[in-house]
Amino acid sequence: MFVPFYSAMSLAFESGNVIGLRMMKMMSGGSGSHDEAHLMVSEKINAMLEASVSLMTGGTASSVVERYREHVAANAKRLSH
Image (tube, rainbow, N blue to C red; front, side):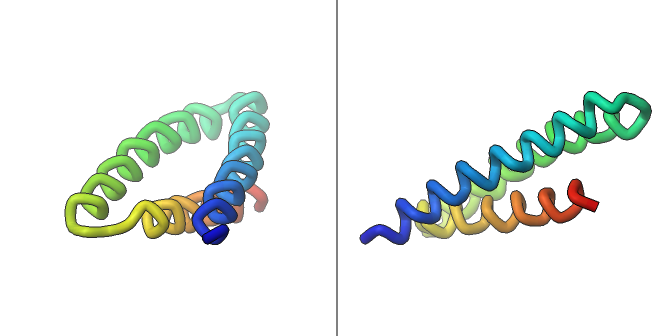
């Protein structure tokens, strides 16, 4: 019963961390900040499309949240290095 709640709360906290990392990168300036802004927007669009297809083909809200967490974890890893 609490697993979907835990996953959603984890996603919220993990996303906040990635937002902070992205803001630091964009505030540093340079071409990397411009590229990061474009990447951020394209990732949002792709994630929305992926979630829509998943739900339309029988996926659950929990599976969508877990997939978002995978994307967020990949971004956290990329931005931390």
